[in-house]
Structure formats: C-alpha cells, structure tokens
Amino acid sequence: MPTTTVERVYYKRDIRATSERMGFTLNTSVLKTPTGILKILEIIFVLIVLLLARFGGDQGTPKYFGSQDDNFLGIGTVVGYAIIVPAVLLTYLMGSNLSILELFVNLVGGILFIAVGAITVQTYTAYRYKDSTGIALGSLAIVTGILFLIDFAFAIKNTRFTVVQTRIVA
Image 1 (spheres, rainbow, N blue to C red):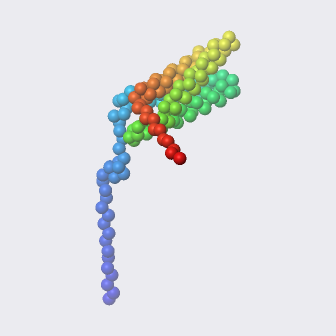
Image 2 (image 1 turned 60 degrees about the vertical axis):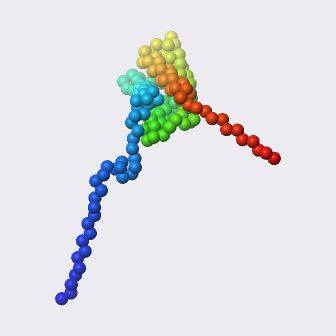
Image 3 (image 1 turned 180 degrees about the vertical axis):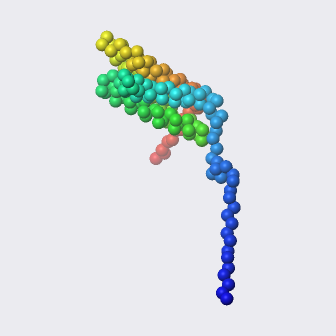
C-alpha cells in the first residue's frame, strides 16, 4: 500500500499594527504649531470658498467670480489650492520640513486669493448685481489670501537662508 506524506504549513500571522511593520508614523505635534494651525485654517477657508463657489448661486447653482476670465482664474485658484494645501499638511504629518517651494506656494496663494476676492467683490457690488452671497464669496477669498500671506510671513521669519557661492578658477 502506497504511503502518502501530508505536509502541514503553518503561517505565523503578524498582529503588529500596519504602521509598525511599514515604519510609518504621523507627526501630529505639527498640528499644534503656528504653521500647522495656519494650514488647517487655510484648508477650512479654501473648502468654504470652494463650496460657496459651487453651491452659492440660486437653488444650488454655481456662484461665478465675475466675467468668464475672472471665473476661470477663480476656479483654477480655488481647486488648485484645495489640492495643494492638504498635500502640504500631509507632508508635515509625515515628518517633512518647510521647503522653498512652500514659500512660493504661500506667497502666490496669498496674491491669487486676494486678487480673486477683490474681483469678485467688485463684480457683486456693481449697481446691477448687489448680491450678498457674491460679496461673501469675495470677502472669504480675501481672508483666505491674508491667511496665506500670514503663513508666508511666519515661514520667512522662521527660515534661515544660506547663500553658497561658488567660483570657477580657470
């Protein structure tokens, strides 16, 4: 009679948390710093402006920033920063530090949001519109731009710049 061998394979299950196995931790202490608080406020205000622009019109229709070109600039700014700011906060949570790119993002964001807000307020305070929701949209965009400029000022204040000079000797 032929004999059969039964081989049993046991797998040991690793019950450690996924973050321990992958070496992934979140630095939540950054949320208590001025930069972290400003990033959270920026996310909140950008999302408010985004939702107000999308659903602030009559019966949930979009609220426009002004002319077709103004609307293009406004939507591009708001949607772009609705993606950029959470990504920057996520990099801080993963342990990254301030980069020169973020300085430019904050400066350009402040300028763009203030410009979009000013255009929107100007459009909706004209004699033919007089729309309080449009004025609120523009005002919130200006406040968002000011938040970005405050974040830029904090970043400049807390950043040490080093100038490296190189010479080519011929």
